Length: 195
Image (cartoon, rainbow, N blue to C red; front, side, top):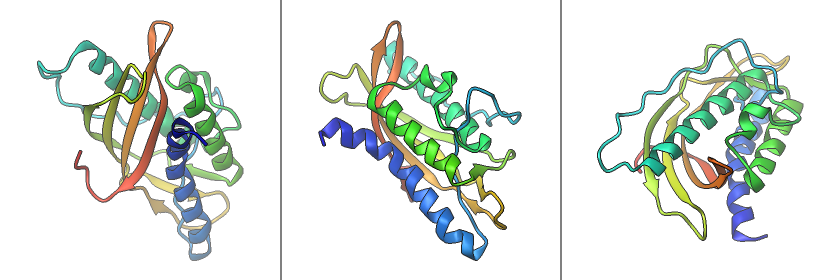
């Protein structure tokens, strides 16, 4: 497996870890989850994230990458709240591509098959986002820390719930047409948001 494939696969590791936790916790009554939905939008709207105003050092490309990441997070949480999906909705496919898209689709399909979801009142916050060095021929990159500790995950027909945690995203973006899309990256649970 090539480096880029491994990095794309890492994006799903967080989903798999949460899913595995749900499976274990289902016996104890607690169950964390991550989910995605079909083209139908869930009725609950993701909580807006507060991002500091741009500083003079933030160039236009980085600002565009930050916006793509924010849209990605909104779609990610909407899919979690919807309980997963066999395929990624169009709203997610506009912000991801390549192997990253394939890995996310597999992760969210597994999420749906396992009956996992985030509760409609779950909240999240993007704590920080900074530019990162693009790898290989990628156009730009970023690192971000996202607080999912106010997300609540449940498993269908199973009592109890589990909270989310802090997540670090390291993402590579390329241009598809006139838009940036996330094409490679990793997400991992972390103890603090130090970037």
